[in-house]
Image (tube, rainbow, N blue to C red; front, side, top):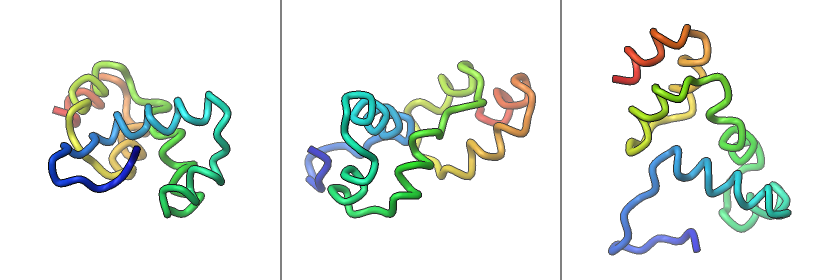
Length: 88
């Protein structure tokens, strides 16, 4: 379940990406996810394609952090060595 509970830790941005990706891969439509999570369909689409173009080492550095989708947009424009530097 994806609901508020004060005893549960927040999801990192990458964990949220994988949760949404897994649901879509299992046959849940993005429209249904957007309706269930009370978010805009464009937010679901953004989170589905969040990690494309970012190197694995940079993702390893960011795996436990919350960050905005704009961070990965900026990282995509850099070469892998610079992505790692910026992620650190």
